Length: 494
Image (cartoon, rainbow, N blue to C red; front, side, top):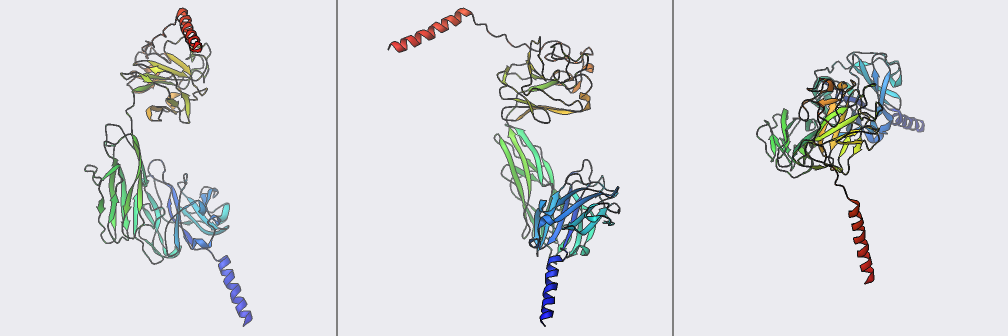
């Protein structure tokens, strides 16, 4: 009897130490129309408290050759819904390859649990699935799949074998999938996409902002879905009639079909950022949110980025007029005040796509006056303001870059993004000046085929020149010195 008890105990210990975890890949998004976004993996794990999440690894495989190209551990994932000890974990991963075929493996402490692929099967050449043939899930995404969709398991059960992969449907990262019941219980589930909307903005005294759409649906519901807008936003079902009060989507047979909603920043708000959440709720379901990021900005002065020179010509590129052609020093950005009042530039910044390149200080730019910031060197002979970048360079990329002007509070004043057209041994300039689109300088109206025109209109005429400094006669200096000295003398005599 003792031997039987010992053997039974050993078998129990062996089971708990070495039993395969009940875990599976539950959802995948890897391809969509346009640039791939929201690429994502989701895993279901039963009794996660019995394991170390970092011991689970997902490895991404390239089906062309079977080699792995990235791996992540489950402790990097975000925990979502759970029921009856089944927990859902999701992770957005940029760069999941688009198949024909490619695959993903899931292992625990190096022991393979799953090796799945999409758009075909292949044999792994390394990693935890080395030598194994992948199992094709049988469904795929294409270049016409929506960015808000994914491939996901559906059905009822408690193990991977109980479920079936389905064609693209509204993504459910961190939530039970469309038509999925795990552990014999179907949780009420609200689905929304996207989870974040940004760019709600307008200048003070105007508004509302432009609206943006998001989609709501629900499965296994026991009640309606209530949409609650935050204080600074309003919502609509038709993008015409907006309201700041709750909206309700009616549940029918436990379902709310995918419904498009619209949200916008309300009019008349004071200058401030407004980052708030629309809340979606239904009885028994986990609340979901749509994060809305935006703000009201001050009225910006009409400071115009009028000319950008990223690629000085190797022979005729002496834009700063210092007698030396330099591919970095002769880069420049020209800014013109196209407003009706003077603007103090102190605290303004000029940036490229990486960071701040110039910090302005001590200059007030009057209407139609220009200021030119060069990459370096010694700007010579300019009647307008001409300076070198305070950072030591502009570093504008010939193949494309951003040029961004911000005020002292970091509000956007003007910006321009150029592409490879900026790398043709000449500047880009507005045609016509101040109001037109950017074109290469040699083809701008009135350029006479010149390569650049810093501090001038494209035809070579001057912008309004800064007023000359008022000269201080040496006699005034002596008089001020005597008055100051007399004041000190009289004070000490007392």
